Image (cartoon, rainbow, N blue to C red; front, side, top):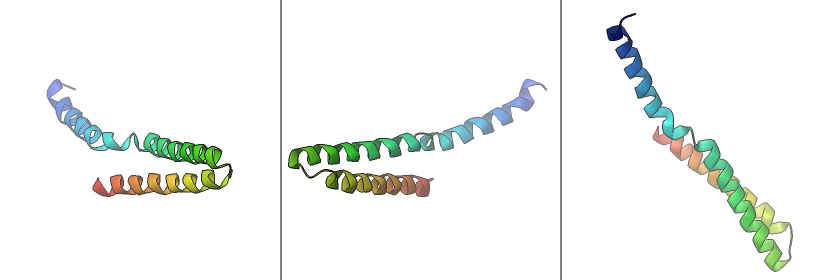
Length: 77
């Protein structure tokens, strides 16, 4: 194969990578939002001494926030 025939393939690959690159970090963002909300719930539970009520509530909020952002990102693509 000469370099002229590889160029369209390379350009198509670069274009595909540019389009899906923002989606690569969705898993990390989902995990981080769940962990942050769970930590907030744990911290509030330790302040108010009503464990595990707020951990559960904030974990669920974190899951909903993560999926909301996930579907929002997928919809925009």
